[in-house]
Length: 241
Image 1 (cartoon, rainbow, N blue to C red):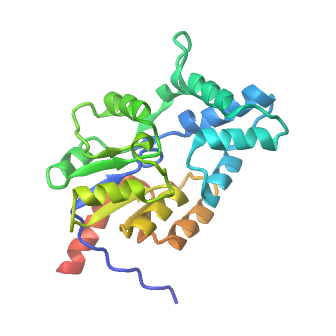
Image 2 (cartoon, one colour):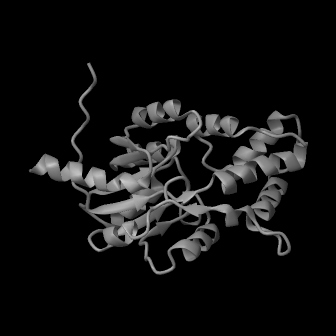
Image 3 (cartoon, helix red, strand yellow):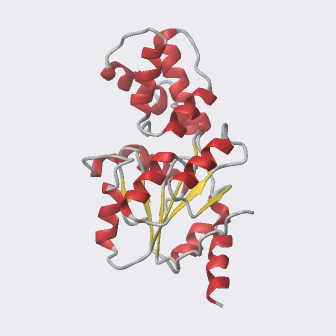
């Protein structure tokens, strides 16, 4: 017999992770990891290997993951060298476009704008601010997210709950819904006692494992993409009716 799903609390604030939730990054961040590893080792790692690390948790920082993968292939390079190469590939070097240009926007036109008429919308991401600003300016220049918490704004990044604690102080006694696509997002929400909603695309590698892990760390629901947020709101309305 399947276990009944928990009732959903009525939301007051929506907070989103960026990568995999608002922005599709398979061809940007994930490919940058592959390209960085190849730059130093001459060998390729698979996206499935990258996803296995993400599902294990503790690898929210793609610089650190790239450094680890390079070491696993028997090459010793400095962390700073990895950071420099990664950023050059991801952001471009002035003559060659960066892979950040390959990102696409996941929310359907008008979805977030409609939500913003009723709810505060914010972002809590492991990106640095300059990386976040590039993508927001490209896809939603007229939409205001407040707050936007990046890796620059916290002493301890995800999976630590520090960023969500900052948001809780901005919205005292409000129910925050946080949407993320990794185990580290779920752990951060669990440790902040924030209702968490997992995002796992049907095309995700190791998806069944990811969904299981997200539930393990407290996801109230796991949706295919952020465009299903309306279904969650209808569910809360039905539970009140």
